[in-house]
Image 1 (cartoon, rainbow, N blue to C red):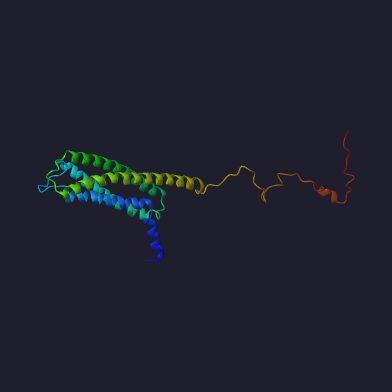
Image 2 (image 1 turned 45 degrees about the vertical axis):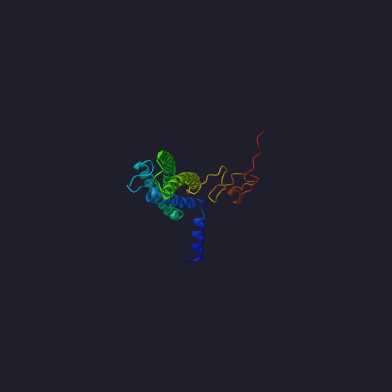
Length: 221
């Protein structure tokens, strides 16, 4: 890989949106990994107050969040090479809708898991099971923050795209610019529109051997 490729990759990884996506991927892996590995007892009962829906919910939104971040990361890599502004707009709108929805779902998940964990009987749980359940709750809360940040960034990106689209449509569409001032006369224009001729040409018949004075008639008074 040449130096330009390394610089592009480094610049892409340093973008705030990319960093938030990578952090969101990590948090989602922790949530569904902890629930899958330590959220059930030996009888396959959910440790969150024996509510299977709580475990299924945490695992489900974690896996979908992971897949969604991977998909939008792939789109971010190709985003600058997309020339169609409508395609860019739809991608950013999809990112905004998905990020806002998952911010809300993580909020619901955090409240649900925390409430079920509060009501659960924790005495028979091992230390590992407690740590896994508490980690799932904690990183569900952290996921709310990261997905809220992704929503804000997607909204700003959408507004920037709208501004650029309006500018290109108004100024780069190829429409002719109409000046409020009169144009300069061209070669086909008859005479000077700004100044009358100071002298007029003598009549053509005055050079046919006739005296010009005979042609002069005094003005009437």
